[in-house]
Length: 262
Length: 217
Image (cartoon, rainbow over all chains, first blue to last red):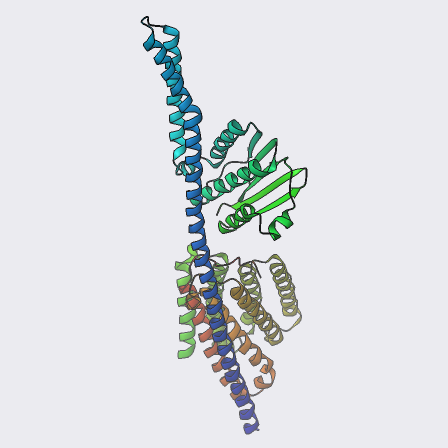
Protein backbone atom coordinates (compact mmCIF):
# COMPACT_ATOMS: atom_id res chain seq x y z
CA UNK A 1 0.00 0.00 0.00
CA UNK A 2 2.81 2.35 1.03
CA UNK A 3 4.56 1.65 -2.28
CA UNK A 4 1.37 2.41 -4.24
CA UNK A 5 0.99 5.71 -2.40
CA UNK A 6 4.60 6.61 -3.06
CA UNK A 7 4.22 5.77 -6.74
CA UNK A 8 1.11 7.95 -7.00
CA UNK A 9 2.80 10.78 -5.21
CA UNK A 10 5.84 10.38 -7.45
CA UNK A 11 3.56 10.50 -10.49
CA UNK A 12 2.12 13.77 -9.22
CA UNK A 13 5.59 15.20 -8.62
CA UNK A 14 6.76 14.14 -12.08
CA UNK A 15 3.58 15.59 -13.64
CA UNK A 16 4.12 18.87 -11.84
CA UNK A 17 7.78 19.00 -12.89
CA UNK A 18 6.83 18.33 -16.53
CA UNK A 19 4.09 20.95 -16.29
CA UNK A 20 6.52 23.50 -14.85
CA UNK A 21 9.02 22.72 -17.60
CA UNK A 22 6.41 22.96 -20.38
CA UNK A 23 5.00 26.23 -19.02
CA UNK A 24 8.50 27.65 -18.56
CA UNK A 25 9.38 26.79 -22.17
CA UNK A 26 6.04 28.21 -23.38
CA UNK A 27 6.60 31.51 -21.57
CA UNK A 28 10.19 31.69 -22.91
CA UNK A 29 8.92 31.09 -26.46
CA UNK A 30 6.28 33.78 -25.88
CA UNK A 31 8.97 36.24 -24.72
CA UNK A 32 11.17 35.46 -27.72
CA UNK A 33 8.26 35.85 -30.20
CA UNK A 34 7.18 39.02 -28.42
CA UNK A 35 10.68 40.51 -28.80
CA UNK A 36 10.72 39.64 -32.48
CA UNK A 37 7.34 41.34 -33.00
CA UNK A 38 8.32 44.31 -30.83
CA UNK A 39 11.51 44.83 -32.86
CA UNK A 40 9.51 44.82 -36.09
CA UNK A 41 7.16 47.43 -34.64
CA UNK A 42 10.05 49.53 -33.32
CA UNK A 43 11.64 49.50 -36.80
CA UNK A 44 8.30 50.48 -38.35
CA UNK A 45 7.89 53.22 -35.77
CA UNK A 46 11.36 54.58 -36.52
CA UNK A 47 10.53 54.51 -40.24
CA UNK A 48 7.26 56.33 -39.60
CA UNK A 49 9.11 58.92 -37.54
CA UNK A 50 11.57 59.49 -40.40
CA UNK A 51 8.68 59.77 -42.83
CA UNK A 52 6.94 62.18 -40.49
CA UNK A 53 10.03 64.38 -40.19
CA UNK A 54 10.51 64.23 -43.96
CA UNK A 55 6.90 65.20 -44.47
CA UNK A 56 7.22 68.13 -42.06
CA UNK A 57 10.32 69.34 -43.88
CA UNK A 58 8.61 68.92 -47.24
CA UNK A 59 5.56 70.81 -45.96
CA UNK A 60 7.75 73.62 -44.67
CA UNK A 61 9.54 73.87 -48.01
CA UNK A 62 6.28 73.86 -49.94
CA UNK A 63 4.74 76.47 -47.69
CA UNK A 64 7.83 78.64 -48.12
CA UNK A 65 7.68 78.22 -51.88
CA UNK A 66 3.97 79.07 -51.88
CA UNK A 67 4.58 82.07 -49.67
CA UNK A 68 7.38 83.33 -51.92
CA UNK A 69 5.13 82.99 -54.98
CA UNK A 70 2.43 84.83 -53.10
CA UNK A 71 4.90 87.55 -52.03
CA UNK A 72 6.18 87.97 -55.56
CA UNK A 73 2.62 88.23 -56.87
CA UNK A 74 1.58 90.65 -54.13
CA UNK A 75 4.64 92.87 -54.71
CA UNK A 76 3.97 92.91 -58.44
CA UNK A 77 0.20 93.43 -58.26
CA UNK A 78 -0.30 95.61 -55.20
CA UNK A 79 2.87 97.15 -53.77
CA UNK A 80 4.36 97.78 -57.21
CA UNK A 81 1.09 99.28 -58.39
CA UNK A 82 0.77 101.58 -55.37
CA UNK A 83 4.38 102.71 -55.63
CA UNK A 84 3.92 103.41 -59.35
CA UNK A 85 0.90 105.58 -58.53
CA UNK A 86 2.92 107.37 -55.85
CA UNK A 87 5.81 107.91 -58.24
CA UNK A 88 3.41 109.20 -60.88
CA UNK A 89 1.82 111.66 -58.47
CA UNK A 90 5.22 112.84 -57.27
CA UNK A 91 6.29 113.34 -60.91
CA UNK A 92 3.18 115.48 -61.47
CA UNK A 93 4.04 117.49 -58.38
CA UNK A 94 7.63 117.83 -59.54
CA UNK A 95 6.53 119.20 -62.92
CA UNK A 96 4.16 121.78 -61.34
CA UNK A 97 5.56 124.75 -59.51
CA UNK A 98 2.38 125.04 -57.43
CA UNK A 99 1.79 122.55 -54.62
CA UNK A 100 -1.16 120.50 -55.84
CA UNK A 101 -2.79 119.13 -52.67
CA UNK A 102 -5.08 116.40 -54.20
CA UNK A 103 -2.07 114.87 -55.96
CA UNK A 104 -0.18 114.91 -52.68
CA UNK A 105 -3.10 113.17 -50.95
CA UNK A 106 -3.28 110.51 -53.68
CA UNK A 107 0.49 109.97 -53.32
CA UNK A 108 0.09 109.73 -49.55
CA UNK A 109 -2.75 107.20 -49.86
CA UNK A 110 -0.84 105.10 -52.37
CA UNK A 111 2.21 105.10 -50.15
CA UNK A 112 0.04 104.14 -47.16
CA UNK A 113 -1.51 101.28 -49.15
CA UNK A 114 1.93 100.11 -50.25
CA UNK A 115 3.08 100.12 -46.63
CA UNK A 116 -0.02 98.19 -45.49
CA UNK A 117 0.48 95.63 -48.27
CA UNK A 118 4.11 95.24 -47.27
CA UNK A 119 3.09 94.68 -43.65
CA UNK A 120 0.56 92.04 -44.75
CA UNK A 121 3.23 90.35 -46.83
CA UNK A 122 5.69 90.43 -43.93
CA UNK A 123 3.03 88.85 -41.73
CA UNK A 124 2.56 86.03 -44.20
CA UNK A 125 6.26 85.46 -44.81
CA UNK A 126 7.01 83.19 -41.92
CA UNK A 127 5.82 79.59 -41.97
CA UNK A 128 6.26 79.63 -38.19
CA UNK A 129 3.15 81.81 -37.88
CA UNK A 130 1.12 78.66 -38.52
CA UNK A 131 2.21 77.40 -35.17
CA UNK A 132 1.29 80.60 -33.38
CA UNK A 133 -2.15 81.17 -34.87
CA UNK A 134 -5.09 78.92 -34.95
CA UNK A 135 -5.41 76.52 -37.84
CA UNK A 136 -8.84 77.94 -38.70
CA UNK A 137 -7.53 81.53 -38.77
CA UNK A 138 -4.63 80.51 -40.98
CA UNK A 139 -6.94 78.61 -43.29
CA UNK A 140 -9.25 81.65 -43.45
CA UNK A 141 -6.32 83.87 -44.42
CA UNK A 142 -5.38 81.40 -47.12
CA UNK A 143 -8.97 81.33 -48.36
CA UNK A 144 -9.07 85.16 -48.44
CA UNK A 145 -5.99 85.11 -50.59
CA UNK A 146 -7.54 82.55 -52.96
CA UNK A 147 -10.80 84.54 -53.02
CA UNK A 148 -8.97 87.77 -53.94
CA UNK A 149 -7.09 86.16 -56.78
CA UNK A 150 -9.66 83.77 -58.22
CA UNK A 151 -12.92 85.48 -57.26
CA UNK A 152 -14.44 82.14 -56.21
CA UNK A 153 -17.31 81.84 -53.70
CA UNK A 154 -15.50 80.44 -50.66
CA UNK A 155 -16.93 79.70 -47.22
CA UNK A 156 -15.20 78.52 -44.11
CA UNK A 157 -16.99 77.23 -41.02
CA UNK A 158 -15.72 75.77 -37.77
CA UNK A 159 -17.78 73.94 -35.15
CA UNK A 160 -16.69 72.84 -31.71
CA UNK A 161 -14.08 74.39 -29.47
CA UNK A 162 -10.71 74.60 -31.14
CA UNK A 163 -8.35 72.05 -29.60
CA UNK A 164 -4.58 72.38 -29.28
CA UNK A 165 -2.78 70.47 -32.02
CA UNK A 166 0.94 69.75 -32.19
CA UNK A 167 2.63 72.46 -34.30
CA UNK A 168 4.23 69.96 -36.69
CA UNK A 169 0.87 68.36 -37.28
CA UNK A 170 -0.72 71.77 -37.85
CA UNK A 171 1.85 72.49 -40.53
CA UNK A 172 1.07 69.25 -42.35
CA UNK A 173 -2.71 69.83 -42.05
CA UNK A 174 -2.34 73.34 -43.38
CA UNK A 175 -0.27 72.06 -46.27
CA UNK A 176 -2.94 69.44 -47.04
CA UNK A 177 -5.58 72.17 -47.16
CA UNK A 178 -3.36 74.24 -49.46
CA UNK A 179 -2.83 71.21 -51.70
CA UNK A 180 -6.60 70.63 -51.90
CA UNK A 181 -7.23 74.27 -52.75
CA UNK A 182 -4.55 74.22 -55.41
CA UNK A 183 -6.06 71.08 -56.93
CA UNK A 184 -9.48 72.71 -56.99
CA UNK A 185 -8.18 75.90 -58.59
CA UNK A 186 -6.07 74.02 -61.14
CA UNK A 187 -8.44 71.24 -62.20
CA UNK A 188 -11.95 71.54 -60.79
CA UNK A 189 -13.23 74.66 -62.49
CA UNK A 190 -15.36 75.21 -59.39
CA UNK A 191 -17.46 78.27 -58.56
CA UNK A 192 -17.99 77.32 -54.93
CA UNK A 193 -15.56 76.01 -52.35
CA UNK A 194 -16.37 75.23 -48.74
CA UNK A 195 -14.00 74.36 -45.95
CA UNK A 196 -15.50 72.84 -42.80
CA UNK A 197 -13.65 72.24 -39.54
CA UNK A 198 -15.33 70.05 -36.92
CA UNK A 199 -13.55 69.80 -33.60
CA UNK A 200 -14.69 66.51 -32.04
CA UNK A 201 -13.70 65.23 -28.61
CA UNK A 202 -10.70 63.24 -29.86
CA UNK A 203 -10.15 64.30 -33.45
CA UNK A 204 -10.43 67.13 -35.92
CA UNK A 205 -12.53 66.50 -39.02
CA UNK A 206 -11.91 68.67 -42.05
CA UNK A 207 -14.07 68.59 -45.16
CA UNK A 208 -13.08 70.43 -48.34
CA UNK A 209 -15.90 70.52 -50.90
CA UNK A 210 -16.17 71.99 -54.35
CA UNK A 211 -18.83 72.05 -57.03
CA UNK A 212 -16.37 71.50 -59.84
CA UNK A 213 -16.18 69.04 -62.73
CA UNK A 214 -15.32 66.06 -60.53
CA UNK A 215 -13.29 63.03 -61.58
CA UNK A 216 -13.05 59.25 -61.31
CA UNK A 217 -11.04 58.75 -58.10
CA UNK A 218 -10.22 55.05 -58.73
CA UNK A 219 -9.08 55.66 -62.29
CA UNK A 220 -6.94 58.55 -61.16
CA UNK A 221 -5.34 56.49 -58.41
CA UNK A 222 -4.83 53.41 -60.61
CA UNK A 223 -3.12 55.45 -63.30
CA UNK A 224 -0.94 57.06 -60.66
CA UNK A 225 -2.02 60.46 -61.95
CA UNK A 226 -3.37 61.78 -58.69
CA UNK A 227 -0.03 62.37 -57.03
CA UNK A 228 -1.43 65.35 -55.16
CA UNK A 229 -4.31 63.23 -53.85
CA UNK A 230 -1.97 60.41 -52.87
CA UNK A 231 0.15 62.98 -51.12
CA UNK A 232 -2.85 64.13 -49.07
CA UNK A 233 -3.73 60.53 -48.09
CA UNK A 234 -0.11 59.73 -47.26
CA UNK A 235 0.38 62.90 -45.21
CA UNK A 236 -2.78 62.27 -43.23
CA UNK A 237 -1.54 58.74 -42.45
CA UNK A 238 1.89 60.00 -41.41
CA UNK A 239 0.38 62.26 -38.76
CA UNK A 240 -1.80 59.43 -37.47
CA UNK A 241 -5.01 60.32 -39.28
CA UNK A 242 -6.70 59.41 -42.51
CA UNK A 243 -8.04 61.12 -45.60
CA UNK A 244 -10.64 60.02 -48.11
CA UNK A 245 -11.64 61.49 -51.44
CA UNK A 246 -15.12 61.22 -52.93
CA UNK A 247 -15.85 62.69 -56.32
CA UNK A 248 -18.81 62.67 -58.70
CA UNK A 249 -18.40 63.79 -62.27
CA UNK A 250 -20.15 67.12 -62.92
CA UNK A 251 -21.09 67.46 -59.26
CA UNK A 252 -17.85 68.04 -57.45
CA UNK A 253 -15.39 66.59 -54.98
CA UNK A 254 -15.21 66.16 -51.22
CA UNK A 255 -11.96 65.56 -49.37
CA UNK A 256 -12.49 64.38 -45.80
CA UNK A 257 -9.55 64.49 -43.43
CA UNK A 258 -9.62 63.18 -39.85
CA UNK A 259 -6.70 63.91 -37.55
CA UNK A 260 -6.57 62.75 -33.92
CA UNK A 261 -5.30 65.38 -31.47
CA UNK A 262 -3.01 62.99 -29.59
CA UNK B 1 6.55 26.07 10.00
CA UNK B 2 9.56 28.01 8.66
CA UNK B 3 8.14 27.71 5.17
CA UNK B 4 4.73 28.94 6.33
CA UNK B 5 6.33 31.97 7.98
CA UNK B 6 8.36 32.63 4.83
CA UNK B 7 5.16 32.29 2.78
CA UNK B 8 3.27 34.75 5.00
CA UNK B 9 6.24 37.14 5.00
CA UNK B 10 6.31 37.15 1.19
CA UNK B 11 2.57 37.94 0.97
CA UNK B 12 2.93 40.66 3.59
CA UNK B 13 5.95 42.14 1.81
CA UNK B 14 4.12 42.12 -1.56
CA UNK B 15 1.05 43.74 0.05
CA UNK B 16 3.20 46.48 1.61
CA UNK B 17 4.82 47.25 -1.78
CA UNK B 18 1.32 47.40 -3.27
CA UNK B 19 0.11 49.73 -0.53
CA UNK B 20 3.14 52.03 -0.92
CA UNK B 21 2.53 52.28 -4.68
CA UNK B 22 -1.26 52.11 -4.35
CA UNK B 23 -2.04 55.62 -5.70
CA UNK B 24 0.07 55.08 -8.79
CA UNK B 25 -1.39 51.64 -9.58
CA UNK B 26 -4.12 51.08 -12.14
CA UNK B 27 -7.39 49.45 -11.10
CA UNK B 28 -6.21 45.90 -11.87
CA UNK B 29 -3.10 46.25 -9.73
CA UNK B 30 -5.04 47.98 -6.95
CA UNK B 31 -7.21 44.86 -6.92
CA UNK B 32 -4.09 42.71 -6.86
CA UNK B 33 -2.94 44.58 -3.75
CA UNK B 34 -6.35 44.01 -2.15
CA UNK B 35 -6.10 40.34 -3.10
CA UNK B 36 -2.67 40.09 -1.47
CA UNK B 37 -3.95 41.74 1.71
CA UNK B 38 -6.98 39.45 1.75
CA UNK B 39 -4.73 36.45 1.18
CA UNK B 40 -2.45 37.48 4.03
CA UNK B 41 -5.37 37.83 6.45
CA UNK B 42 -6.99 34.59 5.26
CA UNK B 43 -3.74 32.59 5.40
CA UNK B 44 -2.92 33.89 8.87
CA UNK B 45 -6.37 32.93 10.20
CA UNK B 46 -6.16 29.65 8.28
CA UNK B 47 -2.77 28.75 9.81
CA UNK B 48 -4.01 29.56 13.33
CA UNK B 49 -7.28 27.61 12.90
CA UNK B 50 -5.32 24.64 11.52
CA UNK B 51 -3.33 24.54 14.75
CA UNK B 52 -6.31 25.20 17.03
CA UNK B 53 -9.20 23.36 15.33
CA UNK B 54 -7.32 21.05 12.96
CA UNK B 55 -9.53 22.36 10.15
CA UNK B 56 -9.29 25.52 8.05
CA UNK B 57 -11.94 24.80 5.44
CA UNK B 58 -14.30 27.60 6.63
CA UNK B 59 -11.62 30.21 5.98
CA UNK B 60 -10.85 28.40 2.70
CA UNK B 61 -14.48 28.63 1.60
CA UNK B 62 -14.87 32.32 2.43
CA UNK B 63 -11.52 33.08 0.83
CA UNK B 64 -12.49 31.16 -2.32
CA UNK B 65 -15.55 33.40 -2.89
CA UNK B 66 -13.37 36.51 -2.36
CA UNK B 67 -10.74 35.03 -4.68
CA UNK B 68 -13.29 34.40 -7.44
CA UNK B 69 -14.63 37.96 -7.33
CA UNK B 70 -11.25 39.71 -7.10
CA UNK B 71 -9.56 37.63 -9.83
CA UNK B 72 -12.62 38.07 -12.08
CA UNK B 73 -12.52 41.86 -11.60
CA UNK B 74 -8.77 41.92 -12.03
CA UNK B 75 -8.92 40.26 -15.47
CA UNK B 76 -12.00 42.34 -16.30
CA UNK B 77 -9.87 45.49 -15.93
CA UNK B 78 -6.83 43.99 -17.66
CA UNK B 79 -8.74 43.37 -20.89
CA UNK B 80 -9.94 46.25 -23.07
CA UNK B 81 -12.33 44.51 -25.43
CA UNK B 82 -15.95 44.85 -24.35
CA UNK B 83 -16.94 41.31 -25.42
CA UNK B 84 -14.24 39.67 -23.32
CA UNK B 85 -15.00 41.92 -20.35
CA UNK B 86 -18.69 41.05 -20.57
CA UNK B 87 -17.88 37.31 -20.73
CA UNK B 88 -15.57 37.57 -17.71
CA UNK B 89 -18.21 39.51 -15.77
CA UNK B 90 -20.91 36.91 -16.52
CA UNK B 91 -18.63 33.95 -15.72
CA UNK B 92 -17.43 35.58 -12.49
CA UNK B 93 -20.93 36.39 -11.27
CA UNK B 94 -22.22 32.89 -12.13
CA UNK B 95 -19.25 31.27 -10.52
CA UNK B 96 -19.49 33.44 -7.42
CA UNK B 97 -23.21 32.64 -7.02
CA UNK B 98 -22.46 28.93 -7.46
CA UNK B 99 -19.70 29.03 -4.86
CA UNK B 100 -22.03 30.73 -2.34
CA UNK B 101 -24.84 28.23 -3.09
CA UNK B 102 -22.48 25.27 -2.73
CA UNK B 103 -21.15 26.74 0.51
CA UNK B 104 -24.71 26.84 1.85
CA UNK B 105 -25.59 23.33 0.63
CA UNK B 106 -22.33 21.58 1.53
CA UNK B 107 -21.11 21.02 4.99
CA UNK B 108 -18.65 23.74 5.94
CA UNK B 109 -16.08 21.20 7.00
CA UNK B 110 -15.22 20.08 3.45
CA UNK B 111 -13.10 22.22 1.19
CA UNK B 112 -14.80 22.52 -2.24
CA UNK B 113 -11.89 21.25 -4.30
CA UNK B 114 -14.06 20.91 -7.44
CA UNK B 115 -14.79 24.65 -7.32
CA UNK B 116 -11.08 25.38 -6.99
CA UNK B 117 -10.44 23.10 -9.97
CA UNK B 118 -12.97 24.91 -12.17
CA UNK B 119 -11.67 28.29 -11.04
CA UNK B 120 -8.08 27.22 -11.75
CA UNK B 121 -9.09 26.15 -15.24
CA UNK B 122 -10.88 29.46 -15.85
CA UNK B 123 -7.88 31.47 -14.68
CA UNK B 124 -5.58 29.44 -16.94
CA UNK B 125 -7.87 30.33 -19.87
CA UNK B 126 -7.88 34.03 -18.86
CA UNK B 127 -4.10 34.07 -18.56
CA UNK B 128 -3.63 32.41 -21.99
CA UNK B 129 -6.02 34.97 -23.51
CA UNK B 130 -4.09 37.72 -21.78
CA UNK B 131 -0.82 36.42 -23.25
CA UNK B 132 -2.45 36.79 -26.67
CA UNK B 133 -3.46 40.34 -25.78
CA UNK B 134 0.10 41.17 -24.72
CA UNK B 135 1.43 39.64 -27.93
CA UNK B 136 -0.99 41.57 -30.12
CA UNK B 137 -0.16 44.91 -28.55
CA UNK B 138 3.58 45.18 -27.88
CA UNK B 139 4.81 48.20 -25.93
CA UNK B 140 8.11 50.06 -25.95
CA UNK B 141 8.79 48.64 -22.51
CA UNK B 142 11.08 45.61 -22.24
CA UNK B 143 8.76 42.64 -21.72
CA UNK B 144 11.08 41.25 -19.03
CA UNK B 145 10.37 44.41 -17.01
CA UNK B 146 6.64 44.17 -17.61
CA UNK B 147 4.61 43.76 -14.44
CA UNK B 148 1.79 42.24 -16.46
CA UNK B 149 4.03 39.49 -17.85
CA UNK B 150 5.14 38.40 -14.38
CA UNK B 151 1.63 38.59 -13.01
CA UNK B 152 0.20 36.59 -15.88
CA UNK B 153 3.02 34.01 -15.87
CA UNK B 154 2.44 33.52 -12.16
CA UNK B 155 -1.28 32.96 -12.74
CA UNK B 156 -0.63 30.51 -15.59
CA UNK B 157 1.96 28.43 -13.72
CA UNK B 158 0.21 28.47 -10.35
CA UNK B 159 -3.28 27.65 -11.54
CA UNK B 160 -2.14 24.98 -14.03
CA UNK B 161 -0.29 23.26 -11.18
CA UNK B 162 -3.19 23.91 -8.85
CA UNK B 163 -5.54 22.21 -11.30
CA UNK B 164 -3.34 19.10 -11.46
CA UNK B 165 -3.01 18.99 -7.66
CA UNK B 166 -6.71 19.48 -6.91
CA UNK B 167 -7.68 17.00 -9.62
CA UNK B 168 -5.82 14.34 -7.62
CA UNK B 169 -6.82 15.81 -4.25
CA UNK B 170 -9.48 13.29 -3.17
CA UNK B 171 -7.21 10.34 -3.75
CA UNK B 172 -4.23 11.93 -2.04
CA UNK B 173 -6.35 13.32 0.80
CA UNK B 174 -7.16 9.82 2.03
CA UNK B 175 -3.44 9.16 2.70
CA UNK B 176 -2.18 11.21 5.62
CA UNK B 177 1.53 11.05 4.73
CA UNK B 178 0.84 12.13 1.19
CA UNK B 179 -1.39 14.94 2.45
CA UNK B 180 1.48 16.37 4.43
CA UNK B 181 3.77 16.20 1.38
CA UNK B 182 1.03 17.77 -0.70
CA UNK B 183 0.86 20.61 1.79
CA UNK B 184 4.57 21.15 1.33
CA UNK B 185 4.18 21.26 -2.45
CA UNK B 186 1.28 23.70 -2.13
CA UNK B 187 3.27 25.94 0.22
CA UNK B 188 6.26 25.95 -2.16
CA UNK B 189 3.93 26.69 -5.06
CA UNK B 190 2.28 29.51 -3.09
CA UNK B 191 5.69 31.01 -2.24
CA UNK B 192 6.60 30.97 -5.94
CA UNK B 193 3.19 32.40 -6.93
CA UNK B 194 3.16 35.28 -4.46
CA UNK B 195 6.84 36.08 -5.01
CA UNK B 196 6.04 36.63 -8.69
CA UNK B 197 3.07 38.82 -7.69
CA UNK B 198 5.46 40.83 -5.51
CA UNK B 199 7.91 41.18 -8.43
CA UNK B 200 5.02 42.20 -10.64
CA UNK B 201 3.91 45.02 -8.30
CA UNK B 202 7.53 46.06 -7.77
CA UNK B 203 8.03 46.43 -11.55
CA UNK B 204 4.75 48.24 -12.10
CA UNK B 205 4.94 51.26 -14.42
CA UNK B 206 2.10 53.51 -15.53
CA UNK B 207 1.04 53.06 -19.17
CA UNK B 208 4.12 51.99 -21.08
CA UNK B 209 3.96 53.51 -24.59
CA UNK B 210 1.98 51.19 -26.83
CA UNK B 211 3.48 50.47 -30.25
CA UNK B 212 0.15 49.46 -31.78
CA UNK B 213 -3.50 49.79 -30.92
CA UNK B 214 -3.91 47.23 -28.17
CA UNK B 215 -7.65 46.73 -28.43
CA UNK B 216 -7.29 43.33 -30.02
CA UNK B 217 -8.57 41.50 -26.93
